[in-house]
Length: 72
Image 1 (cartoon, rainbow, N blue to C red):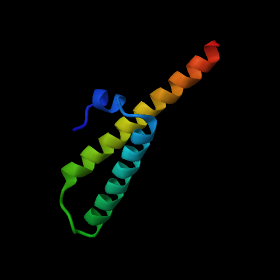
Image 2: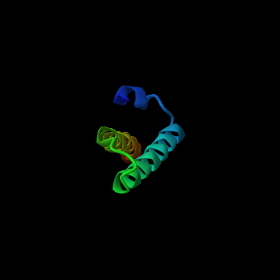
Image 3: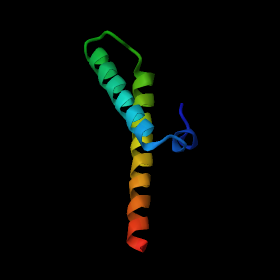
Image 4: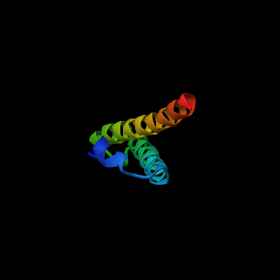
């Protein structure tokens, strides 16, 4: 599992790429589960949490930028 502190060191572009990659994998796994091509439900939970973690970090960065702008 990727730790949030490991993700915090990524640049914004890298964070966006990781988010898109994880969403793509989540979509593929959901499709495989729906068509009974996979039974890896643990990976589904992991990917959902990873997407949430990435979105949280992205939101934190956006909030920090808007807070800096408001202070000036």
